[in-house]
Image (spheres, rainbow, N blue to C red):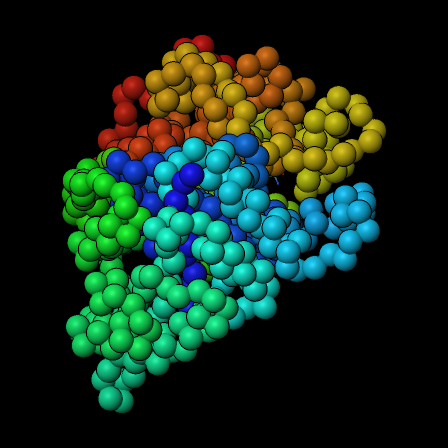
Length: 547
Ligand code: GLN
């Protein structure tokens, strides 16, 4: 039977509980303990797929096609393992399956209650995730903070698991925040005490307390937390804000979290974060800087493009540079000249998106990147932008568009598959999760991947319209990746441009700090060449086999 670590939060949200959970995963994995991570989200949406990025930031998509909380992205990046739909559970999902069973009559006329019906459903998913992952330790993070009404059933289910399992197999980690009172110049422990009291009132005594703070935490404060919260002083660990999130595993390991957790769970394994430390060192000591514009709709909210931001950081590590992001509101490009807004950037990214707002601004960004030979990476919608721009301005297809924006376009270069196949009934289902993609030899893409078959994650409805493929190819828009049967365009690139490439999938979902995504890595390499004023002789010539 696997062991369990439950991570709850107290005091306030947004103190980095997700990063802490992911870091704990990295610490255990580095010590040779096999782990998996699960997120329990208290909200009533069945999944975050329908939520606005303003609510919950990016929607992270797993290989098996689950639309999940962005914390799963942190987990995958920190433990360098793919997770599945089993790793993401919301209250909405729990209610839905209990109510579906009730409608089917599975409860044989019984009264359905939060305890035991919701809690049994939750426990089944926790045990199920551990079993499916075949891991030694399942780390399970509860979203929100203790005391939230929606989170009650999760906390109760955890209490029951603690009760059902042997003493040394379950650990409770509580992440809190120590506010700083400027008037007296001190960190306060009272909110932590209250939050632990709340947790205990639900029957859970924390074993470890991680105190997040924006100031160094003196030993007497930690001792005070230990005394008032009845926790081993060794297990009260301060977590001050650090320069990069990837430093958190190093900080926590240094402060004894790994030793303590292993000891309590009766596991063994020596510290080994040498490789991770080297990666963090490279990140913190870059040899140069490049500036990349990310042109999107929600740029004031960086969490909406979290995986893109992280992928750029990973690609920076690989290229030994810091990647500075210039967040550009796509709409500003509709009223202001692109040369003013994008002046001096060494690369342009148009990330994924839905809907009309900012679409024409993104087209302007693509025109600017193409005509000024600035490296461009289009992610999903960003590829659709690139293809549309090319059709309009190079192939003379005035009014070319995606039917998402203009259903009446004379040149619907991006359209729904149903439209392409002449199917009337538009189901409009999303293509979600990993699909295979074969690469055309000698393309930028094939060189980057150094492979001819890859699997990449999708989240979209619209597709490249094959009707225009030959015409676009003849003008220099190469198709460098397709579904294995050739029917769906997955990657396209502009021949003769130093680096202008778009993907119908989201490569940012598979980038890891220790294993940057090849397309991001090569895009940043092209940005570095741009910054140094050298175009790659390799890439400036037309790619054989394309166009
Ligand atoms: N809106 C586009 C589509 O559905 C692109 C989606 C995306 O960028 N994830 O095809």
